[in-house]
Image 1 (cartoon, each protein chain N blue to C red):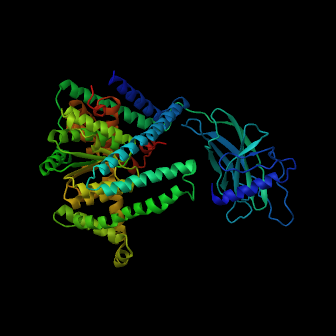
Image 2 (cartoon, rainbow over the protein chains, first blue to last red):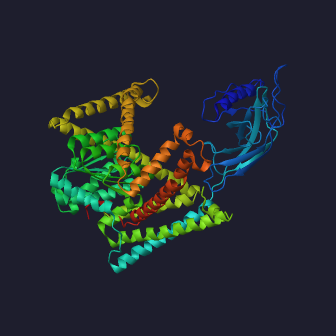
Image 3 (cartoon, one colour):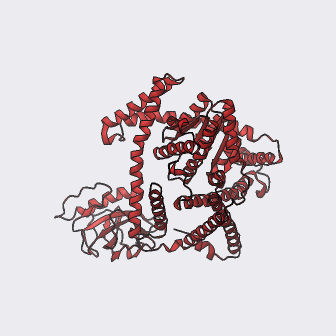
Length: 418
Length: 216
């Protein structure tokens, strides 16, 4: 709610309560709707005003409601005709106040207010319940007082729908994507051989970096990004960690994995332990190799740069979601002379990694890394599926460009979601 | 069973969450919201594990007098003091004027800003290396960077004010950012989005199993 509107609202409530001799004082406590006992019904005269004060604004009319489509029954749309006093430069009207009740006679609850000039409102307040009948009215208010609504609307009912009709395009493309990926996985599984995948130098460099750290007798630092587990980049970084742990186990090189959030921390512990176990060296697993640092961005950066400067790891592998800290980490790492492999899908951070690191995994290469490293036909098959989908997306982009250029907006509108 | 049950749970919940994207009905959205809220609760419990690990690792380092042990003492004292102050202040520890807020505003916040401020120097040193023209591609990069940087400052506007609008440096800079830069960025984003979907599908279908650790 606008600040001005909030102030006006307080004035409005005082004005509404003052003339009613039997009304009880009602505290305004903020978020919950304020119940106004026996508020003035529609069509009642405007609040009386003392002589010489500005006139009360004329009411808004033509209030209508509409259930918001494609939702879980949590919102209703209201629209009305502007008050005749709602004109440019007019000082009579300050705004509209939206009131709601479960019966036409009240009691009315304040929902919200909007400034002058607006003739629509979406009620998605926490108090709105689906499948309940509501009545709405829109009052006008200004320096001259409050004018109760010229009409009310209802019963308005918010209902939930079984399908979001704006997401047909996403559903179709998702189904095609899943079908294609499954087809290629099945195909790869049936043939039993690894489909061809182009060389990805950044991933190949991971083993090279670990080998160099082994030769130098220094540890490997693995940074799985700064996001929590809900970010798929973190998931991917943790999956790759298992392969990295296998390699460090094979080379008997110490591994350091500082982690930002608690859930990735516990998963990272499992991944490193699993890597050592798979490599047949569970006795070499150091439980302290994975440490929890801090979910605070720059506290985490301070800890990592501290490790880089004090422990001097010979290889820095930074894979996952990175933001402003990308260059802080990569430049500090560069200063230590370590070999650096970085990868992220955050396009804005990629230039920093490209400049400061020896190898960079760009966008999708990060998500291909686990399949590439494992070499499992099933996993590599999923990469083929993603590649096929890319061709389809490119074709869609080209067709969309042609259609838009020729003034046809059907495809663009179909692809737009809410 | 040790593998099948987690796989089944992952698949069922994963597919249900995909379904909730398309079905807004409360029969689906309410359980989906509940699952998301449950994840937040699990994370809250996880912080205890993280805190315990932090204390254990650093206490061990202090006891063993590792090379950087004085830093770890600072960390442990800061951690314990902050937690204690928060516990004493109770549920209103984030309110204005509390000691917890003071610690955050007067101690953590300036240090965090100082870390962030280092970025300016790192950008300068990285830019110095990036713009050394050794190959034709590096030359193009340096030229584009020169145009964009000059196009963002008043000096550039003044220098090219007499040229036709299409050749003015601010318009060239805008074109570089809107057309080639944006096209490359969107290509990366589309590729990454498909990668995210493929990874999600692999995890949901149990094809990607490395998160099961080494236990069979």
